[in-house]
Length: 206
Ligand SMILES: Cc1cc2nc3c(=O)[nH]c(=O)nc-3n(C[C@H](O)[C@H](O)[C@H](O)COP(=O)(O)O)c2cc1C
Image (cartoon, rainbow, N blue to C red; front, side, top):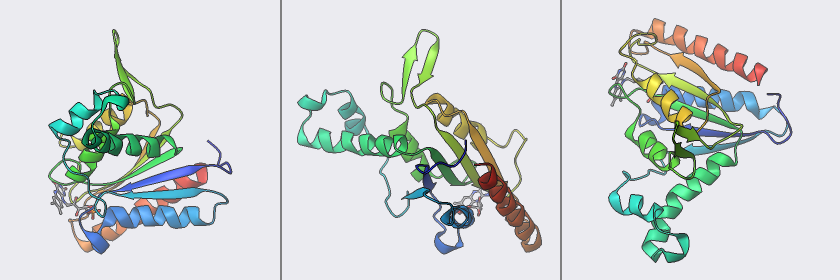
């Protein structure tokens, strides 16, 4: 995809490590790279500053009620997912800055996916299985990890992310990994440098 005047990038951050966050630092590097690029619009969805609660039964059931028949509370609850889906649909490129926490995604990011993966809105069930309804998007995952897991059975996070994105129809997904960040300063510095270079390469191809 070539960069057009209307390219919109949505950056989703989910690290609880504040200014020490490595995934946020990589997302910031990407944003700096995009800063000089014409009319690219970057939106950040900070899932820590603006934390979503767990998806609960009242919110889930609000989705099944016709909009005109919802109570005020059901409209508020359904509006949470509606707004996040609308935000995703408004953008061309989804960037997920994803720390590895306890071998999975941060629960704040899972709470976001729980609003985005919505049957009847972003995917539907068919006789042949689920079908994604989100078209024309691409995604970039910036994954930071204390250990090294890529290509091993321990990496349950990457397949999970791919499956969640694939379910709604986003199959054009690039990945940048910064692994082994807890394996000594020298190793961390080298792997972060490589990740920044990989991001630069991605931006050149965008
Ligand atoms: C609560 C917590 C859980 C973590 N769990 C893991 C883990 O299971 N495996 C791992 O390799 N690193 C783990 N780490 C290390 C992080 O993956 C590493 O610090 C990474 O930089 C996190 O991204 P961030 O800096 O953007 O938050 C964990 C860190 C925290 C704070």
